Every structure is written in C-alpha cells, then in structure tokens.
Length: 434
Image 1 (spheres, one colour):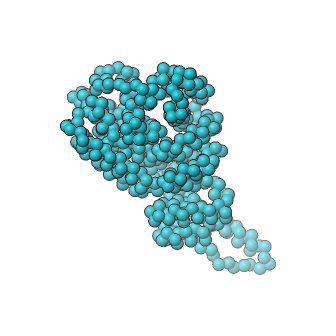
Image 2 (cartoon, rainbow, N blue to C red):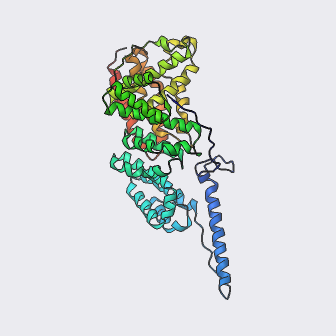
Image 3 (cartoon, rainbow, N blue to C red):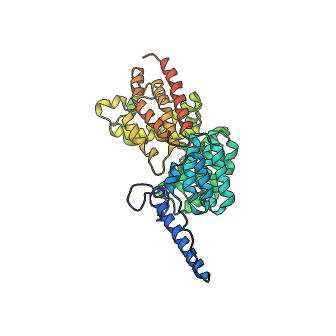
C-alpha cells in the first residue's frame, strides 16, 4: 500500500517540553531549563507587582520576600506531601511537571485515585492550565482505563483528539499504539477517519508521519472488514472505493490477498529458499510481507491475539527481518529467518528511545517472540533442535525490556502480558520433540 505523495511539509520550529534542551545538556527541556526559565518569569512578575504596589501607596511598602517554589524539595517529599505542595503552590507552578511526577508515583504506590483527585483539583481551580495540557492528561487517564479494562471511558477520553490531533503527534501515535495493543479499535478507527483532513493539512507532521497514519488507518479498515463483513468481491470493491477516497493506492489483487491471508483462507507452504539473498529483492520482500501476514493470522487463530495488536507485531517483526538480512552471511542463508537477538535488539531500540517512545509496540513484539519461534518451527522454517537455543538468546532482550517497562506507568501491565505469553509458549515448546 502506498500513500499518494503530498507537497513536503516542514514542522514548526517550536521547542516542546519533551525536546532536547536548547542549552545542549542532553536532558529534556522540561527537566533542564524550562523550570528555571519559568521561575525567572515568576520572579519578574513578582518584582513588577511589588513595583506597582510601591508606587500606588503614598509611602514605600516593605514586603516579606515570597519564597519561590523548590523543585528539589518537591522531588524529595513523600507522595502525600507532593500532593499537598501541588495544591498549595498551584498558582506559582507549571502544573504539568508536578502532575507527571505524581502520576508515576501513584502507579508505584497504588494510589491512582489520588492522582485523579489532583487532576480534578486542577480542572476546577485552574481550568485554562488544564486545557493547555489536556492531551497529556487524557492519555494518562486512557492508560488507567486500559489497565483497569474500563473500556467504556475510551470515547470520552478521545474527544480531545478530534479538535487537535496534531498538537503533539508523537503522543497521538502512542494513543494509537495503546488502543491497537489492547484491541480497542472501534473508536480509534472512527477518530482517525474523522481527522483525515486535519492530518493532511497539518504543518506539524512530517511526511513520514502522515504516511504512517494512513498506513495504520488502512490496516484498521481491513481488520474491521474481516471482523464485520462477509468476505465477497462486492464488499472488497466497496473497501477499494473507500481507500481511493482516502488517496491510498492499494491494488485490488493485493487487498484481496491481504484479506484472505488474515482471514486464514490462504495457506502457504513456505520454504527457506524463498528468502535467501539470491532471490530477486522484490520477490523476496513480497515473501517477507506475506509471511508476516501469515504470522499475524497465526497469532489471532492460535493464541487469541487481536489482529490490531498483531499488526503492531507484524510491523516490528518485518523491521527486524529486514535489518537482520543485511547482516546475514552466505553460510547462514539456510537459517535467514531464525530470530537473532542482536539484530532484534538493534531494530527494536528506537521503540524505547527517550524522546517519542513507542512502548506498546515494543511490548507487543517482545511478548510474541516465543510464538514467532513456534510459528517458524511449525512451518518448517526452523529446526526444532534450535528452539531452546534461540529462545535462551532472547532472555537478555526480555529481561532488558522488563527493566525498561519497570520505569513506565503502564509497565506492570506490559510485563504481566509478556510473562504470561512466554510461560504459555514454554509449555507448548516442551511438547515439541527435537
């Protein structure tokens, strides 16, 4: 599928709170100069206010100097004291920065309800400030809803993205990933279809981001089609017409093949020889693509993994395979599909980068690595003798991922899914004879 090329857009030259600080320290702007600059602004406002009051009175008025908010003191305070400081200093602080810390600690302390109370306090007492960062607050509430399986909250939490989907496109892609990971795609598909004109005309999104948006939207529409409609030529033509309206070039035959594979209607007997470097690149890449679709269907049919989550896996696995084949030596051609921890680690590292991370994608791939090994074995693309060796190599990647998720608000949710999947796969592997 190819998105029709649009005129190149340039992102606005604007420093966001999560961008690298302009001072060159390498830290996030919000953790470096933002607070100092904000404190300086508050000090200037306070001085101007005292200056006006001094000349408004008939005689000089000596005031006790106000104590500026101390971030260091806030960081060292216990959880409840942090909340008390937040409420007391609300007029003198940037609420988002404190709430982000309170949110993380609320997860660790199992005090999510207290965090929600802080959000309500901000919304009531400083509504304008709440609206400025509502995209972030809605995302945090979405994480809570997903973790608690309170899916009824999703439509309300997505409302903010109807008006400003490109205000922070990185955060919006995290929303997309999270909803796909949890299989909650009905509201997501409706939202993405609604905001197409805003995405197309946005100057805040780079061209590759727009291409990714439409690539995800097209796969969501295919998944909805498989789950809802009887698969017929007439219905497929309707889907083609819808893609044409969205300016997505998806050949009718390719669409048909994709739908039939994901529905389990096409079964291919794969051979390792189809993926070796001597095969023409175009044909080899088509084999990789079709194999990834088969794996996506395998996850859905055999391990009850939603196709939307499977799409996150498919994209990650394809990325790993494409990178892996660059490092293959001729003597290893027969095992070109064997997952290699080193190449997977390199390919998945961007999902955990400091700026604009994609934790849902990372979790989806790590969670399904054992199932990938089973899939390759069952399709004759990997010898059963190598199962335990290959899986043991990925223990390091699994452990590093779990350590990474330990620092995230939704980390326990991801870790639980990873451990459950690996335990399930290990039981199945024990039944396979080398």
